[in-house]
Image (cartoon, rainbow, N blue to C red; front, side, top):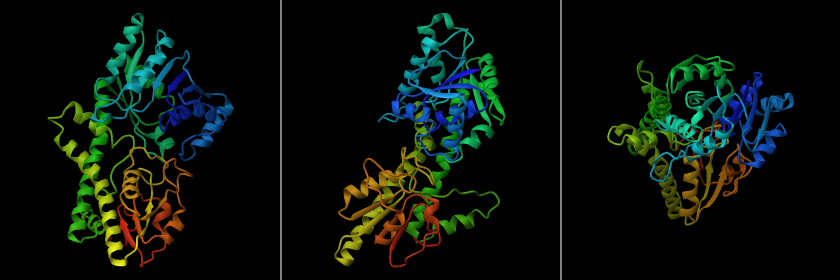
Length: 403
């Protein structure tokens, strides 16, 4: 069995590595020459626990290599980004581009699977594109959609152990795709049609977005009412049928912050709650920035000097290096551009950033007058508390403080 994975990012690389660790011959394709060179040296360009070891092992074993272009194989997997455009409509140009790249290499009996999060009917559109370019393949290849459902920071375990939803354009395609995933997935494989699988991925993330929006809205209400939201949620969750999530500085990442808009843009009249939740979570980042800026102004008025502000965290969630759609990064950008304060930025999971100068998180805390906790990284949780400092806890890093 030989498989080609188009895209070697946060999902494509781990999936390709896990598949190759089970004896599948894998060629990973990426348009970035540095990524290809890095992987072929047995190294990784992203941070994910234990991924570096798996990649090193499979490259050394010879079951995995990276390339700038695809080649003839038994199965092809599209694992590229699907961001949204300025109007919040899905941008499937990367999916289409990757599909066009593999079309010349497709052969009778091949399996073609899209893993990229996509609007409903994307799989059928790519099937039409393939048949238009290669009409002789109609009815001769298997086409399916199988979305990833993994948690950054625990990707390798979840790739193997989570259930997967597999939607073919016909039952034969579902069966063919399920047979492939059974080679390395221990979780159950649930076969359905392509449209249902596409929508399943979107509503999984939309459901999470709605639940987080409730927590974020509650945190802003509690701030107005002078109530510690962390204590309130802990008490409310003692109810046997209540499970309120934890608020944060917003919602980021390649899934929850993006996918709900795919539903809203295609079903604007029906997706009222989904839209409102997305707007609430986007607003939470502005609310955090505004509160920090207001605290800076108050500090200057009271002390007649500009403050030193420490912004703690840039990633979109705790303990990872992924900054995609990060509300923390947005908040930091606003603080830097809208205040004359000295701003120190700490992100322990990355060494450098092309826009921000990063500081050691301990030094940033010591030097700062105002600390804005934006991401609940493990390094932050047990740091000593200096009661002379003003601490704004937007993520629960300082739950013991009423701030």
